[in-house]
Image 1 (cartoon, one colour):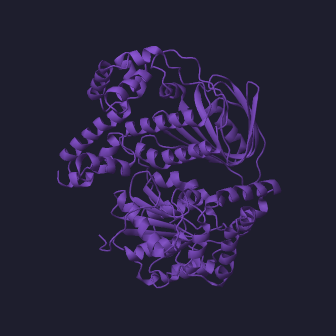
Image 2: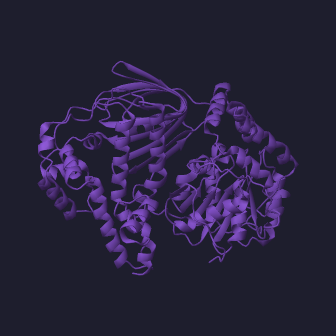
Image 3: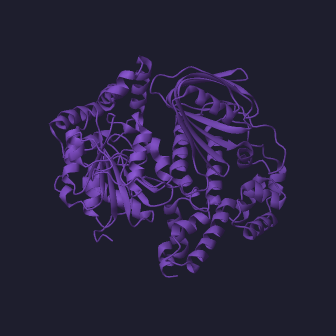
Length: 617
């Protein structure tokens, strides 16, 4: 392995899938989700994907000092290593290209392959003019003007000219809302990113994907990369600077086919592409056709659909949701996109349909919260009408009532949590009949709580569900994630879910109640146990259990449950095989989805970090 010392992995990261490692370096002004989101599922079907968010992107705080290419490269490698990947391929897009190249140059023993898309080895005169304008617009705070500039520069001519005026305005609004806070620092680093000295020393197999309608990075720079990196292959894709928007399926196929160990369909060396040479089966540049590969089956695998056919989208939505739909024909090149991840009782979905449609559906019987990422929507439930636009969060309906609505070229992110779980977290005893939960308002109680909801969903999707989707499923992790979201629903939205305290709650808050709950927990600590389950085992209300623990132990019942599970995790670490077992897997087995918090709690309880216990076992 590389002898260069790695820093602690401190940047926020996304981890998904299983298989050979693949580290993702995103573009300036964006994030891992913003750059690779449309193809993330396809990459994760064959790879363990690890992507970092640069400072000022995603959940990584902005930097107070200028960014360094070496620091970004080392953080990318450190994140992959922290996730248990000793070696891995690296995909770099735009500014992520120099980051990926520097990572391969500084850590050659770890980087097994490079994929470089729409990128550059240094600042040419075109970038010298374009990047300062971008930075000044970002620093001005006028996001709409910045979005107009980026839309003009980033979209290819084919995609830009095919957009109707309203769809173009919608794209600009969406871009303005999604610009990373750290864009000024990213735009400051880009002109300083010069990796020309690294290129001749790259030993990893390399694919350069040239975006032929790119207004940001010229094809001349793409060819220069392929010419200078030893043995590099080059392939073209007819897009502007945004292949993930214009041709995501084609982009994904180029990446995954190359990483499968064979070159992409109809590849060529840089010399052949430059001369427009017609390739044939006799050309030495053409490798053997790629072998068919099957995806590794994973528990809770995301489901997805992408189509430009309006009838396919309509029929699929009807089958998936049982909804009555009326849908207009979308604009040319506009694709309906849907993805859903389920883990345990949770369902997280993202839907984008660039047209207008109306719907009506029966009661959900669940709690559904929607975040409008772009466009707008109107929903109606028993006379209550709510209109929402970009950035708004709303409860879609009363769980027990039918609802209807209209959606206007929107991208929506929806989370569905079982109604019974929300009522259980609210304190209703399991198995006891309760009145239907009702929202007293369909929007969060404050802007701060709306932000809290969005941050919680981001955390669950990017961190917790990545563990829940590993082989074995980590059911305690999925259960904890569902309970976290149920609690956040109750905190963020006005409901009538919480039962009124009664005198019996105080009367039943006895040491005998504590004894029964402790015995119940210790008899099955590996089970999915909630407060309502503890109350049912003790024969009292959930509020009585909380009162009893507070009065007799000075802690909470859930804190006691975590302490018991921490002890079992310790026992497993002591008995583990360091060559086969990992701290992450053992922690996940016992419901600890946040590795940093698990390590801190373990050190406080046992005086050493969990990795030392595993190493000495």
